[in-house]
Length: 100
Image 1 (tube, rainbow, N blue to C red):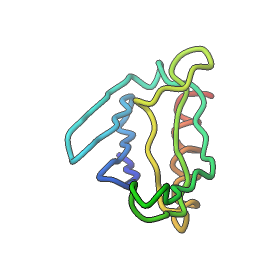
Image 2 (cartoon, one colour):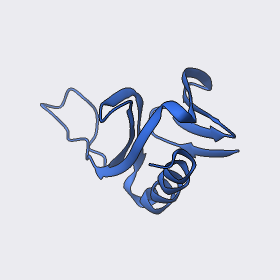
Image 3 (cartoon, one colour):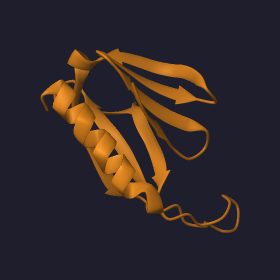
C-alpha cells in the first residue's frame, strides 16, 4: 500500500488493484486500477485572491484521467511544492500499475 498525503486533509492511496481518494480520512472516491488512465503532476499555485481565499501556497496538482482522456476532479489532490518529488514518484507507481 502506498499513500500520498496532500493539502486540505486530502490523500491518495494505491492498494493492490484499488485506488482511493480520501478527504478527512474517509474514502471519498474509489476506483479499480483498471478504470484509471494516465496520471500527471503539474504546478498549480494557490494565489491570494482579493484577500478572501486564504494565503498563497506553492503547490502541485496530482490528478489521473478517468476513462478515455477525461480528467476527473474525483482523482485530484494538491501537494505542497516541496513534496513534488514524492508526488512524482507516487504518480509513476500508479501509472506503472495501470499501464498508462
